[in-house]
Image (cartoon, rainbow, N blue to C red; front, side, top):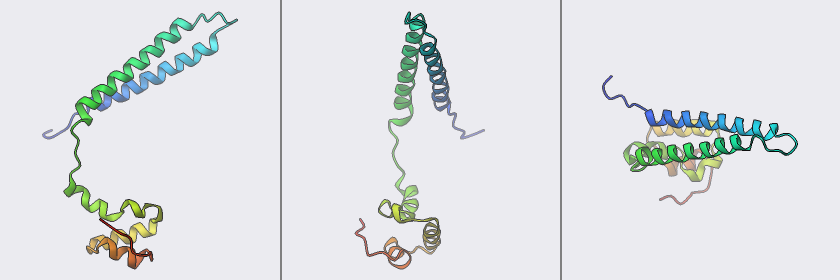
Length: 127
């Protein structure tokens, strides 16, 4: 399929997460299975702990290097969504108010007018 993005690294992060969860279960069992303070499970516990830390560190480094570094927001694409709900209004937006705001966006009503008309709030300083 042309243009398909293969999310191999994202899938590997999920696989490492599953492995770390398995290591956590092993560590929990080892903590419960120690009898008479002999710590017979300590070598396995240590092995799984170090393994989980190494796997996590490696996959995070790979994710940062290959996926996260260089990400930039596309202002043209994000601008309409930002006009729908600016952060200063987030605590005040209910589902009904968001729906009204979306309807107003279809008519290209500016955010300042939306605040005054539909949210019944005092004017807010916008950038």
